[in-house]
Length: 295
Ligand code: ATP
Image (tube, rainbow, N blue to C red; front, side, top):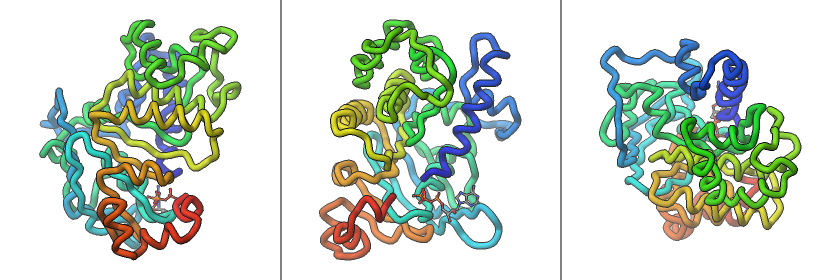
């Protein structure tokens, strides 16, 4: 799942460059658009409110012309539901998420959001409906307040603090020497990995997207922070459609639907209980140390 981070980190770096150049900074994806990575169909539509239904219909894709990274992937996530993607490294989990957020377009098949083919939606608009909480939170050089506000640039200070409260981040922020005005370095040094995640959850809460993309951390985080993260994520995910690249048993068990991906195809699907009963690949994951298998 780490590959997914690369494009977003590139974005963050571009954002840092642009931040000084543009007064009233644009959001990263808009910056990206200006850089020409993205071009929309001339008649691309803009969606205002989303229910958040996601459909993958026979989606195939490969990064290079030799070989298929994803083959005929099919699933439907109903509005508000959580889909967990599990499977060994290189299976294609991040690729599914990259196609959904249109870093790449599928070679065959269709991806629909609320019944609209995503290639017919303006890319910036599509991404505005999506929130990302990734393993490596991208932070830019600036205050904690600005780093959270990045989720919604016109948010008031009170909105920022409310989001931090919801994300279980307020307490640690208040203990920092300059509290919300504490300056973060671009690499986020000075705060822990877990605290960075709480900031990214606060950012996502503020942005209030209909669709959430979560890439669960594989690195170990202390138990107390871990519980704070889980609780904050639970609040964030409530009422939103979520796709989680999942590594934790807890998350996987609570998902409405689990897709087991291997070699670019869906090899098993169902709830935790259903998959255990199948006594197949998923079942096998539980016989072995689970975290090592999926990391
Ligand atoms: P992990 O859990 O290790 O992150 P994953 O299931 O998310 O793995 P993907 O990152 O989707 O797997 O990768 C699927 C396949 O596509 C792998 O073989 C990977 O090497 C390849 N791949 C991923 N990104 C690219 C890219 N940008 N260019 C070429 N090949 C890629």
